[in-house]
Amino acid sequence: MNKIIGLILLSIPFFAIAQQSQGTVKYKETVKIEIQLPPEMAEQMKDRIPKERSFPKELYFNKVSSFYKDAEITAEEGPGGGMHWQGSGGGGMRMRMGMMRPQNRMFKNLEEGTKVEQRDFMEKKFIIEGELTKYNWKIAMAQKEIGEYLCQKATYSDTSMTVEVWFAPQIPVPTGPGDLGGLPGLILEASYDDGKRVIRMEEISFEEPDTEVFVMPTKGKKVTEEEFRAIQKEKMEEMRKEMGGRPGGPHGGNMIIIRND
Image 1 (cartoon, rainbow, N blue to C red):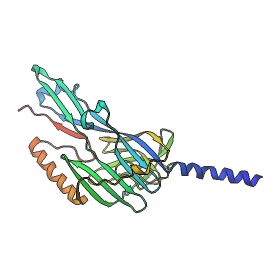
Image 2 (image 1 turned 30 degrees about the vertical axis):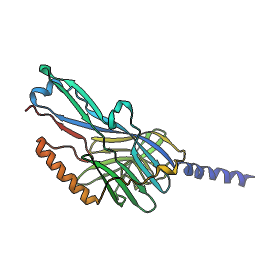
Image 3 (image 1 turned 180 degrees about the vertical axis):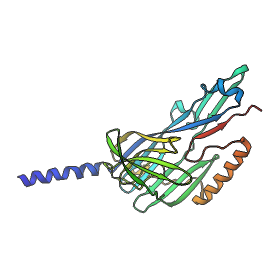
Image 4 (image 1 turned 120 degrees about the vertical axis):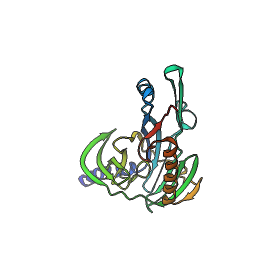
C-alpha cells in the first residue's frame, strides 16, 4: 500500500509539468515614445502628448512549437490597432497624431530550431525564414514572482540592444514573445534597452490550444534576415534625413520629431 501511495505522489509533479507544457499567454507590450518639439512648443505641449503606447499580444505554445501574434484589436486602439491622439497648442494650433502597429507574427519549430516570421515595415510585408536566434544568456541569481510563478532573471546584450528577461522554470517550454527563447522555461517578461520596450505576461491558460492556431505566416516578400536589415537600414537613413533626427531602433522606443517650419 505504501508503495502505491509513493508512486502516486511521485507522479503528481510530472503530471503538473505535462499540463504546463501547453497553453496560451496574453502579454501587454508597452513602448515608450520620445517626442522632440520646437522650444516654443515644448513647455506647453509636454504634458498633453502621450508618453507611451501599449498593445496586447498572444503566444500559443506546446512542447514542439509556438506562435506569437497581435491579439484581437479593440475599439480603443482604433483602426489597425494603432494609437490615435489629438490636442491643441498655443495660438489655436491643433495637432493630430496617429500610429499604426505592425502586424508581426512568428512561428517557431522548437524541435527543429527554426522559425518563420512575418514583419510589417513601411506598409510592406516580409517573410523571413531561418534558424531560431541563439542568445548567449547570462542567468542571474535574482528571482521575482510574476503572477503565480517564481521567475529567474537572464540578460543578453550586443552592439544593437540589451534585453532583460524573466523566465518560469515551472513552465518548461524554451520560448517567449517575439524571437526570444532558448531558456529552461517560458519567458513571462522582457525589457529592452532599459525599459524602452517592455513585454509582460498578464494572463496565462494551460488549456491545449487548437492545432489550427499554429500557422506559418505566408503573406509577404521572402527575404533573408540580412536582406531585411539592409532594407530597414536604408529606409531609416531616409527617415533621418527627412526628419532631421533619429527614429527609434527595432527594439527601442519610438522617436517622433515635430518641427515648426
